[in-house]
Amino acid sequence: MSVHPKDFFGSLRPTVIIGPGLIGGSLALALREKVPGAPLRVWARERSLQKTREALGGGIFVTSDVREAVEGSGLVVFCCPIGAMQGLAREMRGVLGDALVTDAGSVKGPVVEVLEPILGERFVGAHPMAGGERGGIEAASGNLFEGATCIITPGAETAAEAIAGIRSFWEGVGCRVLSMSASQHDRLVALASHLPHAVASALTLAVGSGDAQGGSGPLDVIGRGFRDSTRIAAGPAGLWAEIFLANRAEVLLALRDFLGACHEFEAMLRDANAAELEDFLSRAGMIRRRLG
Image (cartoon, rainbow, N blue to C red; front, side, top):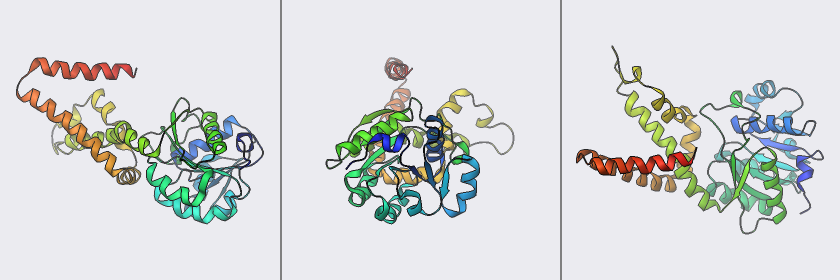
């Protein structure tokens, strides 16, 4: 393998983004800002071509032909739904040459399982921990990745040059890069990302479903705490359903731990145990304050 970071991040060969949603669109904008004039291509489905071109503006080649998009490229980044990656990888494999490939999926185990056999040592799984409650290319931002953590998940057979190249790429768009196994990634993000979304959705339903049809209801008296706690529940439902199902085993374990904490709180409240309740809240506060 002879590909080096400069070949796809500097100027020589195009970088290709597969799927121009929030992450893919933001990545395209970030690359155009950070490396003006570097060749950049975006693959989008036929029905999304016009919207993609309008959102990204000039200087970016947009096509619905995945083979046309990747031929002669130096790097390909999957930013499409997890379920679409395998078919697209098979379709493009014959024209990839020695291009490196990474992805931006929120779950890594299933992605690595289907893409490594197709793409081999050139593929390095990745997950930039960036996003928001608004999805789609309309919400794309060129600074989305600034200061974000990106987790890469190289396998035992991944080429060292591929790992170095993909690390360089994600660092180049502003990310702090961590490396770990796909299984460790899925376990950690189930706790740090997937569980919070599930909890925010459940909390929103618990409060909002009881809203009064006439007169004042709970949503009429909410403050900043409720809004901050539930903001992410407004995220794209289809995307998050796919994420939860793809990481189902780890999310179920995370839910078990969360429900255990809820039962602990319930018992202290039922028993009117002020000392234990204060200790519970104090421990949670200490952890939260460490985050800034």
